[in-house]
Amino acid sequence: MHTARHIRRNDSVLVITGKDKGKRGRVLRMDAKKNNAFVEGVNIIKRHTKPNPQKQVKGGIVEKEASVAVSNLMVLCRECDKPSRVGYKRLDDGRKIRVCRKCNGEMDK
Image (cartoon, rainbow, N blue to C red; front, side, top):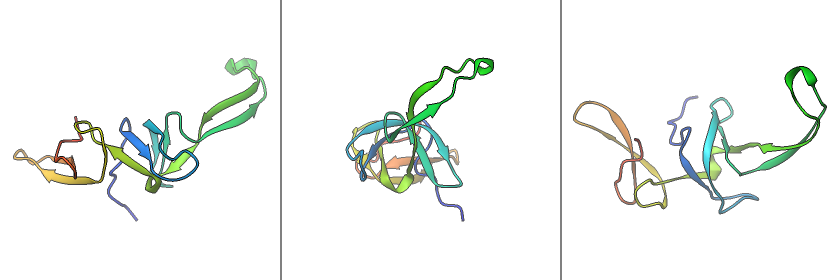
């Protein structure tokens, strides 16, 4: 099942539910199969890693981002800087762009 991707890489998003509710961050990468996103500074987990000299990895406790369900995120509009639902609009040249439902501003660059 494929759904429209209203959240993409490098989007600014707001976490709307969960332990990190209210936090803002940038989407680092998407996991399309699980419909999850990795957001900068959100859902931080600790991993205990062994040192691996071949890969220049120091051992210890490493903090990194875990994935967040896309349903728990809302895109922040570039123009009005508010969390908004995403609409789509066709341009005259045939391109399809994402638009903010609050201010009708373009969300794509």
